[in-house]
Length: 206
Ligand code: SF4
Ligand code: SF4
Image 1 (cartoon, rainbow, N blue to C red):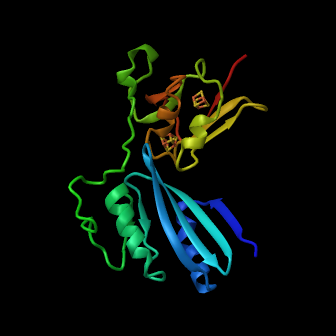
Image 2: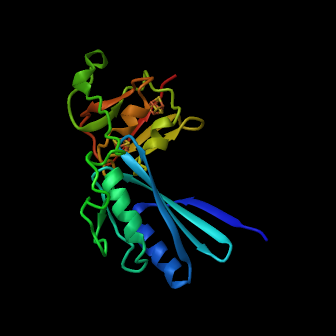
């Protein structure tokens, strides 16, 4: 007997339709599991058919709402109430919503990890202007890509080999600050305002 196992990271928007098509195709819901990271929760939806398992992972920024899948997977409401109450994942339209009274715990969302935002004004040595855009001091950036991997909405693109560029999509960015936290060691990123919108490209000189 052989078990197949898939783990795929997907965007938040298509997740609902992916799960709906799995349900219609006869897959059963195995679990929904949340893990807290600073500024976002990683949520894995697991389904199975026969001995084949598939897992779909989404990164859900704190304060972003996701759709419940309990309208077609009724048992999902158990997992969704749990991740709402313990991790602070905001789930819309759960078929039986306990409104964070599922466990009746004393501490609100005990596993939720708020982002520790390092505002530009908290770092006077950086000299960055105040503002709510993510700006990059390329003299400090080593193009390691850590920020890109932590961004929950894929707003950052780093090309270390070819163009030596760091790009940010300001229309996609939700100002969660996870990239600043990821770059804590190099301190290249901060909140500021360089007056540019849309996709902004920073190039590493030299
Ligand atoms: S901004 Fe920081 S984390 Fe991102 S690529 Fe540059 S050095 Fe790495
Ligand atoms: S680029 Fe924007 S959305 Fe992405 S981690 Fe940084 S602040 Fe958050």
